[in-house]
Length: 51
Image 1 (cartoon, rainbow, N blue to C red):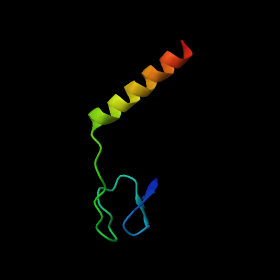
Image 2: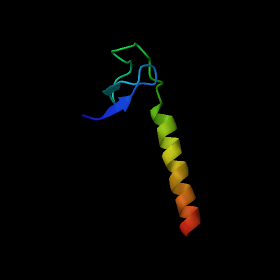
Image 3: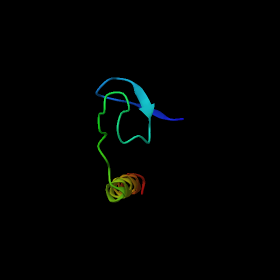
Image 4: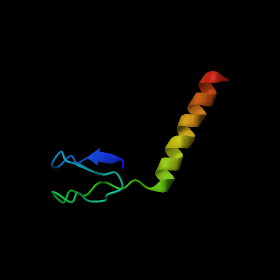
């Protein structure tokens, strides 16, 4: 199981958790469109550098 550290209490929680079960910290959500845009940008920059 992958984990991530909660910035609220420093406990390791499941990486898919939307909220920390210990302190209730709500992890920010990142949209799929934003993730796709970031990957496209990275790939374009790599293409520009190498070709």
